[in-house]
Image 1 (cartoon, rainbow, N blue to C red):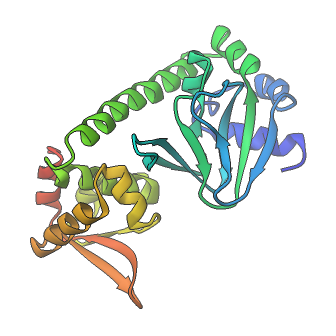
Image 2: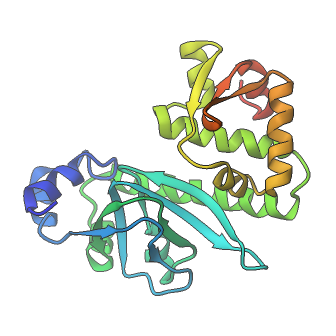
Image 3: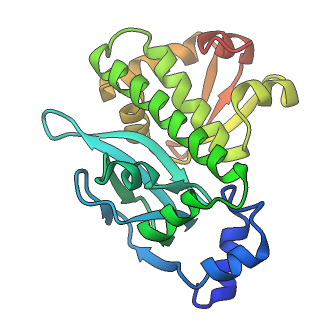
Length: 248
């Protein structure tokens, strides 16, 4: 993106700003900028000063922490139109690492401009969306800490949560919604590697693969491959899958 009209369009289609008056966006579009990152390039490091907030225009971003042995522990994968970095705006420092998983373009909003919006919101939807995302991050952080402190219990739940997140990224619907829409035998595209999936599940690769194979043997899922490469995960028994997640 190179001109202000593109900034305007990007802001308008984001959930945070979709109800924003045109007069508001006409001012904000001059204050934002675009940043491009190469595959595997670090966007920010944990504990560095947080000076801005990002919206993903294109690409994919991995949010992660480093484990006690220096291993990379994925928390969530974000894609087009997702936003991140809001926690650091309030805490003052970054609480995680962020990395571009592919060529990625971000819309950058400076901390001052973001806080100005918080102080003078155009309507309640902006604050509601921010609070919703922050509460989601708190819930996810709690699950993340629990999964790594208790790796060998309910690993099927952890894997199901990862697949559910993938379904939301793929279709905008969770497994329960897809079940109601499509019944059984719908497929979740493999948009991330099994290595990243195991990290998100808080499991070792060995434990992850063993449990995934067990779920396939139990006819809950079917792993779809082309020339040996995993391309998707078919949910063959959505009722049992939803029971794992306590979805009704």
